[in-house]
Structures are given as C-alpha cells and as structure tokens.
Length: 251
Image (tube, rainbow, N blue to C red; front, side, top):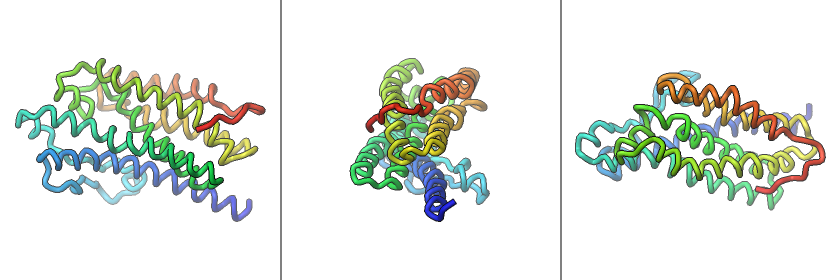
C-alpha cells in the first residue's frame, strides 16, 4: 500500500470522526444558543460535556444541550420550548447541510477530492441528524420532538408530515444524486472504495442514526429503528450498490 493511499484513508477516518462531532456539537449548541437568546439560559456555551471516556470522545454520547425545558414550560412559554427544540435540527444541521452541498460542488469543480470527501461526510452526518429525529424519535414522550409537539400542541403526525417532506427530499437527493457522483469523483474506477463509501453511507443513516430509537423512546420508535436496520438498510444498500457502466450522477 502506497504512502499516498495510507494518508488518504487516515484523512478518511479523521473526517468521519470530525464530521460526526461537528454535526453533533452544532446541533447541541443551536439548542443552547436559542435557549440563551430566549432568556432561559445564562451561558450558551455551558453544555454538559460528559466524562473523559473513549466512548464519549468517539461518539460524544454524554454530551447534552443542558437546557431546562421544565422551566420554559413552567413560565408558560411553550412556543419558546418548541423553538429551542426545533433549532437543534433546523439551525444546527439544516443550514450546515445546505452549506456542505455547496462546499462539495466547489471541491468537485476544482478537482479537490479530499475536500470533496470532507463535504460529503459532513452532509451525511447532517442528514443522519434529520433522520434520527424524523421519523425515528417523533412518536415519543420526551426529547426534542416531544418538546416541539408539547410546546405547539401538535400531533406527531403533523411533525412527520411538515418536516418529513423536506427530509425525504434531502434523503432522495443524497442517495440518488450526491452519492453516485461522489463515488466517481473521490474513487474513480476504484470499486472497493466505491463499495466502502456505499456501505458506510447506508449504515450511517439506517444502522447508526436510524437505530437511535431502539431503547428508551417507546415502542413506536423501537419499531421504526428495527425497520431501519433490518429492512431499510439492506434495501437502500442493494438499490445504491455501484454498478459498472452506470453514468455518474451530479450533486
């Protein structure tokens, strides 16, 4: 294996960790800053950062927004609770999702494969943050979507309908347009690399983010998570598997 190949895969691993962390932290900071701007938090940087463990370093599993939604509801400001809950996904992931697509287009036009890979993985992580809230954890009694629904007195079905449509469009664009284009741009003619990127993309959405409702969020979320890993993951993997002679899609 050449030194260039080793360096590329080292960047790949670093980008995988870094884009996940960036997507997660911006999501939590978006909650926190919205709470601060609404007058319900003194310090927007005061997240719960958790313990110094390997698991927390890799997955940020102990990091939390540190927003007291109970105090917001007790003050009779349910609409602020909804805004705080929504902005994690809307500002923390929605805006970066659009920007990451633009960054990938910039990188592709200038032939910068490493930058294009970073932009693609960041787009992937932001899409995952959409999916693990809508639909995976929409039908639950706690966490962000439950606070959104409680604050606005909405049915979960309204949330799935209103937020689900743009998320479905983002999902379609990612897997039918962006992924095929990135495979041919980052791994031109390299079947193994294209296969790895395909498996990674499908598993990240359906096996990692898609199973976030497996425990602790109720039976409906658990069933959606089971469907995600057992049915959606293999179905999308088969549908998106790289095939010889298939023309490159655009971003």
